Image (tube, rainbow, N blue to C red):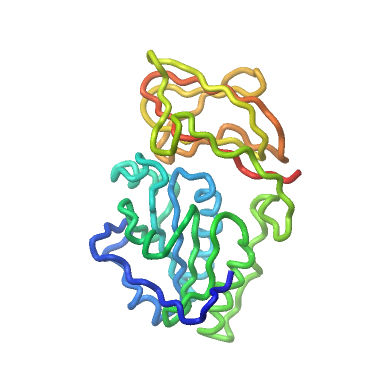
Length: 274
């Protein structure tokens, strides 16, 4: 969306924030005089954040040589994603190489007034807000806003066609069916579910275009759909683990079996086309 006012200025980053993939902390007052800056708030294990990443990485590849700068702000959704070692490993596992702020104390989050993951802010050359979007979607409109800012730098620049939708649900104007709400088996995002006595199972029904689990720890995690044979879900540093991706919005029953020191933080569902 376009900002309500044309004079919203980019806040400067707090000086005590740790940055990954940066030799020195980025300074908005030094970046915005030379070109637009795209700021992406995310959590490396949060489904909507991760689904946005392929677009962010491709926009960086396309437009950084033309003057765009991309910055990530990692404001954790779960307690474990705010841990330093987990964050460093998760960022590396997702292939993120642009600068990322460790915003585990939510200083930048509150400065920007974020309310959810992901949140995108495009700052024009000079440091005023040009475009913002909250949540998934509006990928083509966001890329067109980036191109508009780059044309202000050089009206003769040759720009590619905006990216084709990665998923059917990403297409502009596409109707999507609302997925089952995210499930927190421990009771909240702050409390994980752990298997009692070293093993346990979770069962639920869902309707969605895909199913994912947020889990970490040591042990084994297996999933089965609709009473089928269970398959192993490898635990890894990225922590958002795909269980099933469906061609359309579908209904299924899920059983998760865990052993050992596995912690299950959330079961998340992606939207799908009807």
